[in-house]
Length: 172
Figure 1 (cartoon, rainbow, N blue to C red):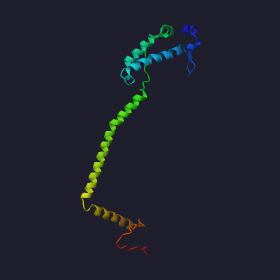
Figure 2 (figure 1 turned 135 degrees about the vertical axis):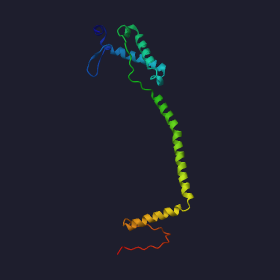
Figure 3 (figure 1 turned 90 degrees about the vertical axis):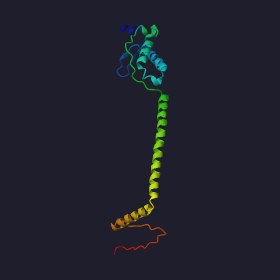
Figure 4 (figure 1 turned 30 degrees about the vertical axis):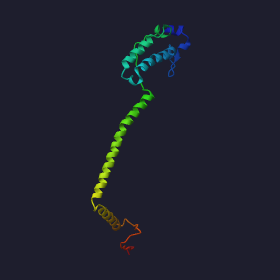
């Protein structure tokens, strides 16, 4: 390792941002390894990289080892390749989201249709019972009367065409 420090230009090396450690051969290694990693992923298809990781790791290792001797191969031995972050391209994520949305849309429409059918059945059941409207009006009047009797109602809005008799008293 010491010959790397003494024989190579300082521009070949970098300093770690966190602790200031010297990273030998960082500057030529980084672009070479990125390039070596890009080709196998592209050939495997970015949507299939998770499925093909063992093959991709092997191809990355082979690409790094094949790097021209003056750059890396005579100085660096690659013993392991690890894929840490494997995120699909935005196009693939958007496409998958669109597919899921398209698959769920008919299901949503089916639920809407079922809801509309049930609402129609409910309305038909109310309409089928001739006395339902009269019953609902009677129940509403009963609730109003109970509210008045309990002293909870202070104002009653009377329709302009009201034909009933109203006995209004102030309670005295």
